[in-house]
Image (cartoon, rainbow, N blue to C red; front, side, top):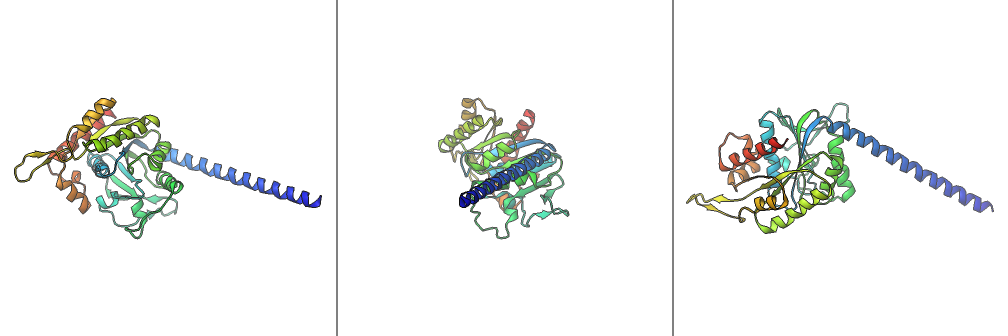
Length: 292
């Protein structure tokens, strides 16, 4: 009888402890959600750049979009949530780790120019070649911290660069930044478009409003004869946008100068160059701004 009472007491204590832990976790979640809401309230527009397929130039579009907006005078933030393949830091020439605010509470984004600040998981790693081997909960927590524990301040735009697919990272962005507006990036060939249709389905399922589709690497002018070459077919992005009832934001040519600028850490839209790419990209930015 004594043993039974002791066992019941232990069980009661264990249940009470578990209930206390659950309440504590719930309280912490509520506190973080309140911090996220307060941080997002200081940001006017959130643009979520996504794609169902890798290798379509999504990070390049994100970097040049943020560069273009900052160059127009908009206070802009660029958040790289591609955990396993972060490239934004390299594209913007950021080599140092993120600093912490004097009160030791918030991460300080890296300032690229007076209007552009950037946060990337790569800027948290001492060894840039180290693989990040995380499961879903760790990635979710990182994205939440990039919103709640970063001193973004007052922004006109926050551009969010996500990894390809429709998994943990895009879903976490949508859940924590419900007012985000999607920009879907594709290349013209059917292999890419098949995955882009999944991205469109994702946006509709999670009720993510979509600004439109950008077609990247649409054509290439031969440097010898100046004749256009369709490296990845052509027109697929526009046809898909029309078929899905979405806005076609524009088509970008393949340009080796874009590759070179990304490698040296200075997006081409920072430069005062007038090329087929920069003219086409400027039109895409204008089309985005018109919708806002």
